[in-house]
Every structure is written in C-alpha cells, then in structure tokens.
Amino acid sequence: MARVHRHTVYRQPLLPLWAVVLGVGIVIGIATYPFYGQEYVTSLLGKFLCYAIFALSIDLIWGFTGILSLGQAVYFGIGAYFVALSLKINYATLHPTRYGGTIPDFMEWNGLTELPGFMEPLLSVPFAVVCALLIPTLMAFIFGVITFKRHIYGVYCAVITLAEALILQDFIIEYQAYTGGFNGITDYSNYANVYFLWVILAVTVFFYIAGRMLTHSRVGTVLRSVRDNDVRAEFMGYNVANYRIFVFCLSAFMAAAGGALYAAWVGLVSFLDTGPVFSIEGVIWTAVGGRGTIIGPFVGTFLVKGAEFFLSGVLADFWQLIMGGLFIFVVLVMRDGIIGSIGKWIRRHRAGSIEQIIADSDAIAADRQRDFRPAGASRQSEEV
Amino acid sequence: MQAVLEIDKLTTRVSGYTILDEVDLRIHANELRVLLGPNGAGKTTLIDMITGRYKPTSGKIRFRGHDITGLPPDRIFRQGISRKFQVPNLYETLSVFDNVMVSLKGERRVFSNLLRRTSPEDSDRIWQVLEWIHLVDKANEAADTLSHGERQWLEMGMLLASGPQLLLFDEPTTGMTEEGKFQTAEMIEKMAQDHAVLLVEHDMHVVRQIARTVTVMHQGQILAEGPLSEIVANETVQQVYLGKGGNGAS
Image (cartoon, rainbow over all chains, first blue to last red):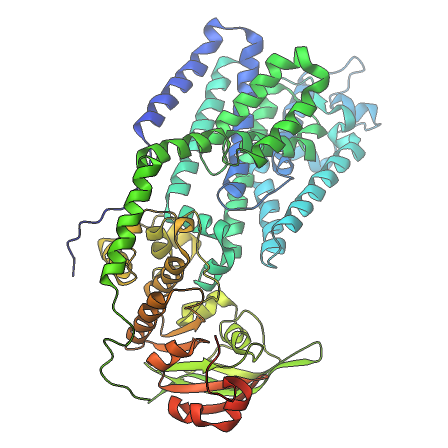
C-alpha cells in the first residue's frame, strides 16, 4: 500500500559531518595535550571532562525532558565518594601512619581503631566502582517512583531535589568518622596520568554519543513531547511517569560515572561536590551552553569553567556574582544558550529572508481563499 | 447496533457540589453524537471522567464491554479512546510531522521505543493524515508557528493518527473562521464513518451542519436526547439553553 509522494521530512543526521570533525579534533587535542602542555592545565582538562559528563546528565533531564533537578550533585557526589573511600582505604593499608594505623587518617582522628565492618567490601576497587554506579541509579529510581508516579514535577520537584542535596551534604559533614566530614577525603593515590585522561576522554565520548543516540531516537522524541506537553502525551497513551523515571535513572548513572572518574582523577572529594551549589553550577553550564542540545553542555562547561580559571585570579571576589548574573542573562535573554542560539540563527538563514517568508505565507493564504467553498454548498441532504 | 460506550449513573460530587448527577449515556459504533449544554452543564467534566482525568464518585463507564471507570488516562487511551482538548494541546517545539508521528497508533512503552524506526507504512500514514488536515506544506514547521485554526486541525490529525474507536471532541471549532468551522465539521463527519464520535459544540451552525442525535445536558444531568429537530422544538431545552428565540448560543 506504499504511496509515492513528493514530501520529505527534514531530519538531522545522527552524527553530522561537522560534529564528527569537530569532535575528533577536540579529542585529539585533549588526548595529546599532556605531552606538551602545562601539568596544571592537564589536571583541569580531566576535571572539566568529568564536569562535562555531569552537565550532559543535567541536560538530558532538563533540556530534553523538562525536569529541573537542583540536586543532581547527589548522584555525582555519591559516585565520587564510593571511589574515593575505596582508594583511600587501599592507600591507608599500604601506607601506615606514624602510629602504625592502617585505616584512613580521618577515621583515626575520629577515634576509630579499625575499619568498620560495612566498609570492608570497599577494599575491592572494582566493587566500589560498581557501587558508585549502581547505588545512585537505584536512588534515582526510588526517587522517580515516589515523585513522578504521583505526578509531582515542576517547581515542587526542583525543591525536593534541592532538599536532597542539602540533606546529603549535612549527612556527609555529620558522619565525619566515615566520610571525612568537612575536610573531605584526600591524600590517596589518584590516577593523575595521561592514560587515565584517555579513559576519562573515552567515557565522555561514549556518553555524548549515547546521549545523541537516545535523543535522536523515538524515545527522545517522546521525551521532548513530555517536556512540551505532558498532559497531551499522557492522553495520547504514554506513561509519562515511566519515561521520566527512565531518563532520570540514566542521568543519575551518568552523573555517578562522572563523579567516580572525578574522584579517581583529582584526588580530593568533599561535601562541596554533593551539594546544591555544585548542582546549580551544573545547571548554569548547561543553560549557558545550550540546553536541549548535545554539545551545549560540553561547550558551556568548558567555557564557564575555563573563564573561571582565567578570570578568577583577577576577579576572585566577584566571580560568584558574575556566575549568577550570567545565569539570569541566559535565562532571560538567550534561552537557548550559545549552541541553541547558533542553531536558531542558522535555521532562520536557511529559511530565507523575512520578506521571502511573508511572501510565501501570503501565497498560501491566497490559495486557501481561492479553494474555499461557501457554507452549505455541498450539503445534499438535510436530515434535520 | 452495539453500544461502544456505556455510561451508567455516573455521579461526581466535589466539596458538596454535584457536578454530574446520575448521567446515563450510550454511544454506538460509527455514531456521531453531539453534546449540547450551557456553560457549567458538566460536558467537559463528563469527558474528563470518560478519559480518566478524574475519578467519579459513583457510577460505571464501560467501553467495548470493559469497565474503564477510574483507570489512568494513558490506559484508557490504549483501550481505544482519544480526546481533543478545548484549547489545542500540541507539542510546541516538535514539527507538525513529529506531532503526528509520536501520536501514531502503536507501541507506547519505553523499552519498546528505544530502537524503533518509523516504517514506510507509518510514514505513508502520517502523510495521509497531513493531507487530510491540509498541513502537508507545513510538515517541517514547529507546531508553535501555526495559526490557531491550524493548531486545532493538527490536534485533530493527531487524534486520527492514533486510530481509536471513540473520538471525543471538546469544542473543536473554537476560535476558527467560518470557513474553518465548515471544513472542521466536514472532517468530523467523515471521521464518524469509521469511528464513534462524541462532539461537544456551542456553535449552532456547526451543529445544524452535521448533528443527527443530540444529547442536551444541564446542571450535571441529561436534560433531553433525540434527533436535532426534536431537541430544537423541545420547550424545556429552549428555556434552558437555546433561549426563547431559538437563536442558539455563540
């Protein structure tokens, strides 16, 4: 029953050529930088890549599905803490303190004499990595079921996630014997070498391509329809809660992976990586770069964090103010962010000038007028 | 003919107010039923009950033999009931084509949609629907660029694509030009050849154009039911709704 028709749908290819070229260029640039560049910048690159994964995870739920989470750092942070604890515990067993203790220093300071039983499994780094990835995803699933199944979203959801982040932050500070408290976890052997940078790079590329594939798929279109009009989607047969839970869990997994890599790369994690400030920073990077796009989060993260690096020496006191101002500016003036605005500009130029658009529209309206039949002209029989 | 939708003694009380009062309604396959009534009569609430937006206080709704009372909206859709809202509800940033594509009859579950591609048959069906609603030339435009009448038609197209057995239209000609209303009424009449249709309308021109059996509601109750000619002649209906000159609302 195939019909021949002249109509075509405008579809972006899954991986446009310009994106592939740009992506390969960036990957090669970052992968080779350690061989000739400054060590300090290399360490920043690794950090920024982890942040870029974090920002993408926010973009998937916010830009594409319309869920604003102000507590995404919860998943990043728990992923980071699992890995950091594991590495720290392993480091402590191999490097006894001057008193001969083989447990992490912050545990000693808090009066513990041996490793708590429930932490012993963390001696295995692979196990810790699995926990780092799965436990945040499980938490996200539980959160999703409790919140989305009850149709709680929008502002209320944002506030609940904010509360989550605050609670976790307080929890970490409170239970300092197990978490390192205010000082965080530091002084452990971290993987700050070029090969691990390649690992981080590979994971970043993987997540970005996976994100592109997801948003390009039918599920991506459904997520966008949930974002645009969740009532219409529900009455069109979609279980909106299930879709939200799905993308929320995926996003938590991604954030957790970013956190795990971060802990291994940087060598210091603290409650600051789990709280509302870091969560909102991620939202800002995504907003600036362009929510609802895939490379937007990457661009926003590197741009804002890069600017912070270069300018905070000069403008240290004002940096938070500038960040806040930047967020307000983007939300009010440039809603689509940098990448989104560029995309819009390109599309408008492709469509032609304003005069051309108006002329086309007038022509279509004129055709409709000509084809209009007066009321009642075609009615053959009146039943009433 | 078999009754496709059976509503028995449907009652809804909220905060002491009775919004629907023991409503009985039967709609048959391929029937076009018009639902009239002044504002506040309970017409939209009735549609909300049928489509699962709210749960009734008592009473039963049966669709093709299955009890659907109180089911969630997405499940009721999958039983075969599609609803058009009073204000056009579209996916604003999606293209016209994608609005219809995502509404196509078919798989709704998350994991089944992960690897789903639009088949040639699906694509043909979408173009068929777009031709029907006169929006072929706007297929790649975002839904929020359409005029009001086009938005109404797009939503109707989405309903058509979803392949239901029962279509519920809530004042679909609101805000349209005379030409638009005429074409919309024609579309609905054509749809009724293959679907059961319940049409809530205020515009008497449209009603006179396509109505056969009419049900009139007032203050949550069914006031009268019958062919349009009887309804127009019914004195109670005249007093309550049409006004003593028989002029018609809006």
